[in-house]
Image (tube, rainbow, N blue to C red):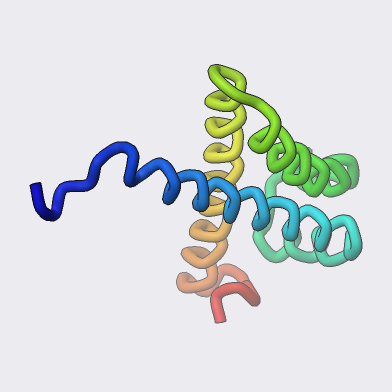
Length: 116
């Protein structure tokens, strides 16, 4: 059938996407490790609540990103599925923080550099 993707055709694309996500996680984690003050500033700008913005959390987040990338590469089966779920939750939490900060900035409640 013309125009119909077979599962075998999609698998390489998904594997490539997985490698891109791993690269983004490593790049992001390494950048945060190299510039921990930037992480603290971003958490302030995004108005991350309470304990989630603590210094231990700021130091842990980059290593969690790097760890997720490594686990995505070395695990398989159900374990890899669980790591993908954790990665998705991390990305969704970032999205929620950014969307909330932008929404507050539009209402005039905060200044957010990511909204410019």
